[in-house]
Amino acid sequence: MRYGRALALDGVSLTARRGQVTAVIGANGAGKSTLLKAIMGLVPVAEGSIRIRDEDRTNAETRDVVADGTALVPEGRRLFGDLTVEENLKVGGYRVRRSGGSAFDEVMALFPELEPKLRIRAGHLSGGQQQMVAIGRAMMSRPRILMLDEPCAGLAPIVVQRIAGLFGQIAQSGTTVLLIEQNATVALDVSHHCCVLETGKVVLAGRSDELRNNDFVAHAYLGI
Ligand SMILES: Nc1ncnc2c1ncn2[C@@H]1O[C@H](COP(=O)(O)OP(=O)(O)OP(=O)(O)O)[C@@H](O)[C@H]1O
Ligand SMILES: [Mg+2]
Image 1 (cartoon, rainbow, N blue to C red):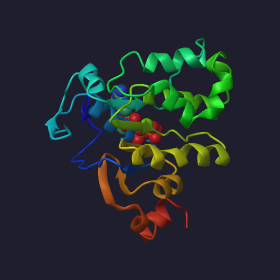
Image 2: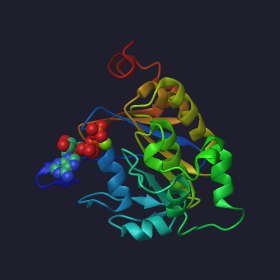
Image 3: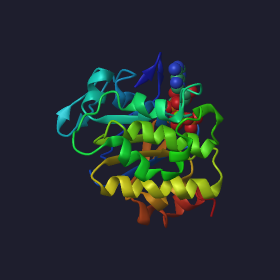
Image 4: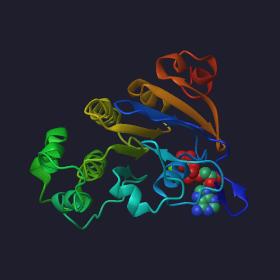
């Protein structure tokens, strides 16, 4: 994947499995957001392929990727600050892919703390609550694949714990979770597998419990 002549992703290979949290960690500019944009069909893929549930989705139309069940929680949340929490959530549910039960009730079960805030403008919430709305909005489409771009960035540790604790739960309910994080400690704690991305290349990948004990990861990403 290139921006003009600059190569942003180069030979990246990773697999995210159903029922698991797969994490991608990497520093600023490593290509993490570009990877998610490529999967969403938001930037062109020049070489290689993207497969979703055994179907080739390389350079697919974004609306088809979404309709097929992939939801993105974008970097910086991108809520409609002037709309209420409820309205923001409903934006995500305009097209509910899978039937059965109420997506709205499921989101309220994930984030009971949003219930008293439903009529408040999203822009007036705390950062952590806004992140919950952003994740809730994505979950309103009952996605098969949930991709999150640095959902814990800028949040207080206790809020990070609350939010990161949900990813395993969401994965267990049958959703494939692809988590992008700069916070390697959190990413390794909540994921089954993890890839380390450096300037567009996967430099290391494996089981998260093993990577946590890897000298390179400990030194470069965990500050140990
Ligand atoms: N629209 C663009 N045009 C040109 N170059 C871009 C564009 N978007 C990103 N890049 C470059 O591509 C590389 C990867 O960027 P990307 O946003 O994917 O990184 P990232 O890992 O998500 O970083 P961050 O942690 O800051 O979000 C960087 O060198 C960045 O400067
Ligand atoms: Mg990014």
